Image (cartoon, rainbow, N blue to C red):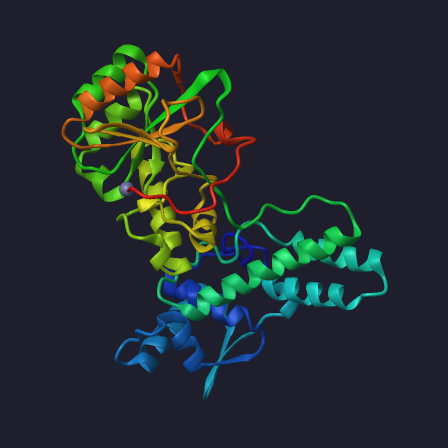
Length: 372
Ligand SMILES: [Zn+2]
């Protein structure tokens, strides 16, 4: 569970457990290995505040589906709950917690403590329960956050006694500037639902690198255009499924907004986006953790905007190297792009493709941005 969900049977095979609720049920049982988990907790874990009318029956149906996916007798029914018959140490999350507590208890033996904490950290293969996908479960979100926090605590504790590399953090930062090397400037175009043939023509004629942060639903409206955009050298970034305020969503919901959009866009365009831009420039640690869990490597803000009123930079000065410019797919974008390119030339700047490497050595942005 400390990464992509993997269910290994005694004969070494992998069991396939499909669907968010089935996976949710399994993780709820596995977090308390070989102990009876009350039915009420399971209903709360799976459905949160919005359980089905006949929750007891719905749970029972889910359990019988899970039984079919798992080896025989893996789930034991009790009058008031269900038990997953598995050795506690066979569940990575349970083993992780045991090793961390054991490590933390060794206050007098630094080497032994570091060994236990390192062993615990090595169990991680990704983000906690990253592909379980329960959307409305506060209990699930709390368990994810608890495991991720314990991971950071363990990494801190290990660092205190031994200089080792801390595993990658479960949040990814947002940047408003990218590398200014070689007088680079970066052109990004966000939502708006009107593809521009003029921009496509400019890209084809001048090999102009443009990153489009696409809303999945907007992309779907004009798939042939976006395929032509990619063929012309354009890069597609993740602007979520439906453009919500991510800061108002739960961790699970925000993860789906990032993860689903990039997976679907990857199928459509042949490259799965790794750069994401939060709608309205709104982000916080939960949004950043969701981006990590959704599979992104970097969040991208902006430092300048261009629209029909002209160009506006963060400091009111002419465009400078390293700036990320934001435009929108709206009527008139072609003319706005022509004006922007003239301003870019006037400053002797070079439009450059935006990649994760563009952010090396940059300082993350601390606050949400204004715009969309
Ligand atoms: Zn937007």
